[in-house]
Length: 494
Image 1 (cartoon, one colour):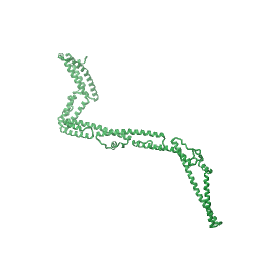
Image 2 (cartoon, rainbow, N blue to C red):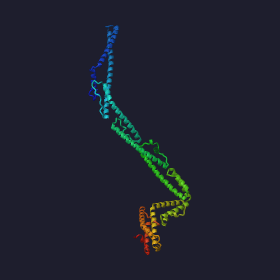
Image 3 (cartoon, rainbow, N blue to C red):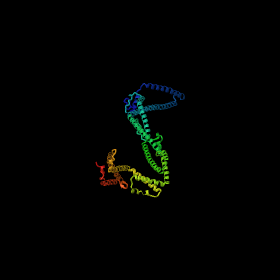
Image 4 (cartoon, one colour):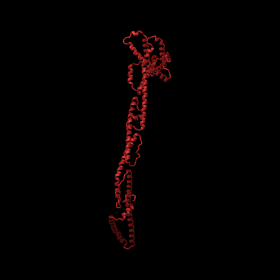
């Protein structure tokens, strides 16, 4: 009983309580005496009946009567002892149960104080306080604390379930699933803060998913593809069925990259097919209305469109083979025009032997086709140089023409409307622009020759050398020019 009354100075161990209740004959003793008196009177009356019966049976002083009374004594003693032992045992059991309950309540009190980090006060008890009152008072003192614990555990379970659901969606391991004891108020706040972070992560990932899902839908629509792989189908399915795990979002990003690469490839393929088709249409002189209708119905770069473009290219290739001679002549004419634009000389042109072939077959046509493409590429890659060449030629020819005009004495007599003033203005423009154009052209030519490690030719002559030769030839005629009124230095002196 000492452990029961731990922490309560007014309660002693159970043996002292029992002794106290044995030695202290309180008001309950009157009832006990009444019970004893009733038992005594009843027993006395019944035993006397047995005595009279024995007198009748054996006589008042016979040995048989004595033996009967002795047997009565033994039986009565045995029955009464057994009955009272049971009664005492039952009362002891009840007392011990209450003591055990009190011990458990005190242990619960200690746990609750530790968990709630607070002191739980109970009513004072003294030696006269019945054990049942002690039990009731302690239990009553713990009821409010139990309610607090129950509320916290309920909130904990609710938060744990919420964390579990979000973590399942995010494929993350729950942080607080292992908490089984009553949480402190601080721990509950930490869990709530953690849940806010998880929800923000969920919102962010869902937003990212929906944005990328739309991108996938657009890419597939442009490609003319339908989802085949299981993951692709999952992305395009019910958004609520898509697990917002980091690995899934990474996989989704890979899917978008794959579709973007496929889009780029199909764009290039469609562009190449259209370029080739336009070239074939031009050579075949396909009707404009047919071409416009085909182009209007074959837009984009989807799978079906690319297939249709391939079919049309194959059709035109077949027609081209059926008209090889016509195509070869067209290719030669086109190549010759490109050589003219590139200012190729005879030596450069004769390097293309197939141009002069008298045969008309598919090999000749294919090689000429390649030469045309190469010439186009060369001109396009160096378009800035050719623009400068054309600009220089214009300025140079203008300068020569003005020089010839300056050497014509009749121009002084034919000066009308300020012709000389106009020539002076043009001379200043040439004086300024021709050196600038030549400097820029030489810079680009030097860059080309360093980059390509080969010479840039102009009519079979290195272009830089050609320009220098022009100036040398012009200067070599200086003696003749000095006999005129306006020498060549007229353009670069002053």
